[in-house]
Length: 217
Image 1 (cartoon, helix red, strand yellow):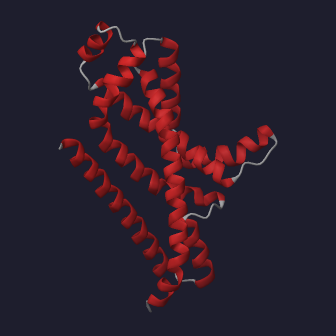
Image 2: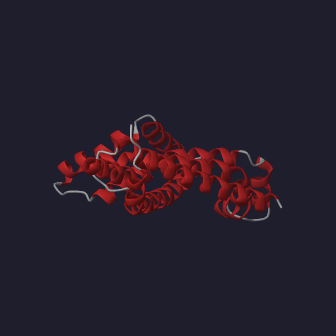
Image 3: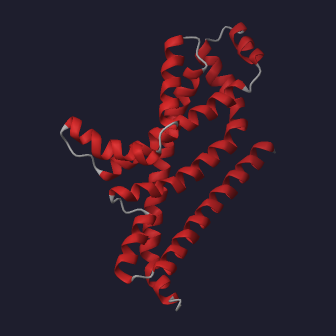
């Protein structure tokens, strides 16, 4: 088999453009997931039963179904209901963000529950409300616990974002498919795609490790 290195060189700019789109989708999705996860995670430990039940149903349903199916639901099924097409980018970040939120909520829940209950009691005894105690005392301490799994979630979403290629969105994986359709260089292109994903995940891992060291110092 002839390995065409020049194909990789010529395809690299397009693949890097796809990688930039992948990072964009991942960043927006994790940001959405962070906000959803924060509120749902707090709701999971709330004393209000309705909030706990709704949060549990959300996390169980999202974590119990494949991301690919969720992408299809938002991109193909919802337009039938609302009688209006959904843009691929909107469908991609919505599906990935909602999916990420379910996992991030468990990260927040575990992080908050790792803080001694006496911290909440101490804050309330100082005259702070439950929300104030959570914002100013509990969550800042929980950051040390939740940072590593949040980094892992970002990496997982970076790789899972390749699934949005099924709706024609041109992120890294889709760009690779389009190049292969034109050049038939499957081995060279998929090897390049895998390498770019590896570089991105390693860079994120090193950055998270750096933040952990900064926190520990």
